Length: 101
Image (cartoon, rainbow, N blue to C red; front, side, top):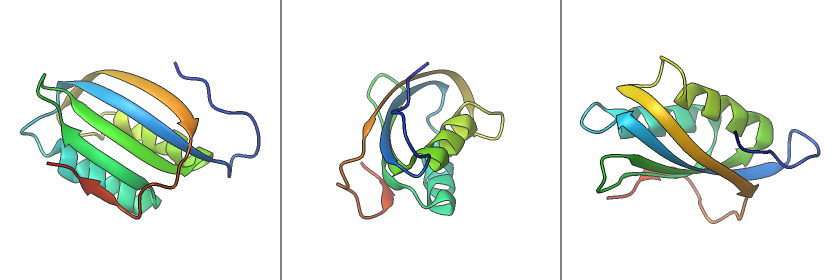
């Protein structure tokens, strides 16, 4: 499991994740955008050619933790079998959360 930077839970971080399982053609990207919007995160989600889904999400550390929990929960569409992730400092590169085609 990834280590989160120490400090205030309001510190902005970036989650970079690769989600494996039954995550394409099941509305996974759509629901990921909706959940990220609800949480006020910025970033992107896209289908990868190997059948996985790639996600980059930025926001306050505590909110990114909630988003990460959702990705691994039964609430996420499809069937998530594995999430490979890394955490780094946010760059502020995004103005919203959107699907990349």
